[in-house]
Image (cartoon, rainbow, N blue to C red):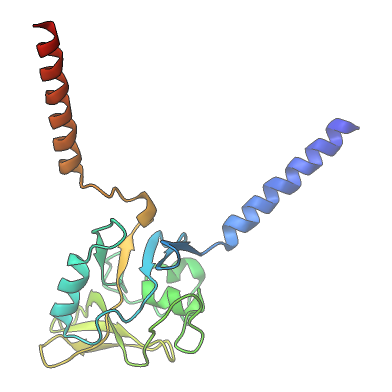
Length: 203
């Protein structure tokens, strides 16, 4: 009887954990300065308007050179994650298919819009640049609007400026704060120092 009750309790706990993990989506990082999306496995800056509007090339450069929270792998969101040159309209597809469009997923699956920003700040009414070039005409890039979930393509010339929102691949809490080559250099330096000390003691 006791074993039967324990088994049922364990089953309830397991199903509860599975349910929680299935529903979990945006997890706070750095005291709410960033949010990890455990479905897309990317981290979003909490502030969707850090630098205002800028041309596409500037936006790409800004995001790629951003260092925040020890992470340096920031970039503009992709609207074609699998690289098949087909834009997924998240208003008409399933959750799993929508994962191919990071902006679309944020709007249609996470429910983050201009009027319902959730934990985010600075979401603007003007469109946001993506990193995705519009394949039929490479002089354009896809953009996204957080008022109505609309997407379009816009010329990437210096005369056109839109907002930029930065994301990082993976969970930034798991990103090494010291770049790997530097870590090896530090390890090597420490090892050389220890060997030198050991030699002095022998003398």
